[in-house]
Amino acid sequence: MIDSFEIIGQASVRPDAERILFCDGTDHRLFRTETDLELSHWRPNRTPAEYRAGTSTEVCFRFSDNPRPGSWSIAVNNHVDVDGILSVYVLVHNQHAVAHRRTIIEAAEIGDFWGWGELPAQRVFQGITRLIDQGGEPQAIYAEAFRRIPSLIDGSDRHLPEIDETLAPLRLGVELVEQGQIRRNVIGSRLVQYVVPLSIAGDDDSRAAYAPEFNEAISPKAILWPQVRARWDAERVCLVSTERKTGWFHDLCFPGYLWADTEGKWLVPGMTYHDGMTGYDIQNERLVAAFTGLLRQETAPSQWGLGGTSLPFGDDLQKQFPIVGRFLDEYGPASSHLTPHHVAAALKGVFN
Image (cartoon, rainbow, N blue to C red; front, side, top):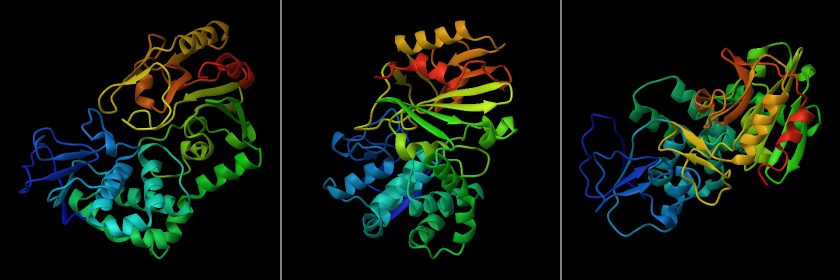
């Protein structure tokens, strides 16, 4: 569909092309409104309404379904992550991408939205992320990823045994939830609680409190990865309560796609994200009131923080998205004396 691609940096000059498709973001220095097209979910966003979707990868699929007339010869991106790579792949290797559309979209969601995907998508995400983590020149990373995507999907990639081994935390997380060892309690149409007992969480506080970063490779660092929760609850708020010897860690996690300018997904009432991923505001009176109540009822010597508000740690928590609220002190997560049932009751009805 598209003949070539180029990964640009801050000092790059505009590629020698009349019409450019800017994928998964744009460079305002180089973008020409009269000739170019943005296919992205990054804010601020100039993607035409008919192409808007979830990930930028899905946006590019919609463009390939119904491209605008013109001589589109080059796709451009300005960073290296899984969704960025896959969005360009959709345009440059369109025939293969269309044949594996669901897998490729799911792989992009695992990276950008902490979303769920089946095993082929997990392999694509993990394989590309491990390639990215090795470092290198962006254009070369894209080219190598493009070379390996077909083998990651069909199962012939020579690194697959090692990749599958590193994906074990996702398989284990699903098993623990399905077997009831990690309890999943649906509290309302938009709120669910996961309760992780001490027998599963273990004694390592850092692992019990671990918050995976954007586009982070799956590893044993976390007990219950957000991607596992997204298997059932991609468009719900998740309250994760993890038992410790002296109480409970409590984390309130929002859907991982909320930072992006998406189409057709549920939005948390009162949450407004700023441009990029740098920050958000929350003006949800019921949520603020619930956390204020938890602050009054708490007997442990720490604070209930809520990002994007004037409550404690309102600024610091914005850096830990999709965790938006948690019980913590200046050193990190802290053990609350409030039980999972107590916290769930306080939040019941807030998001309905």
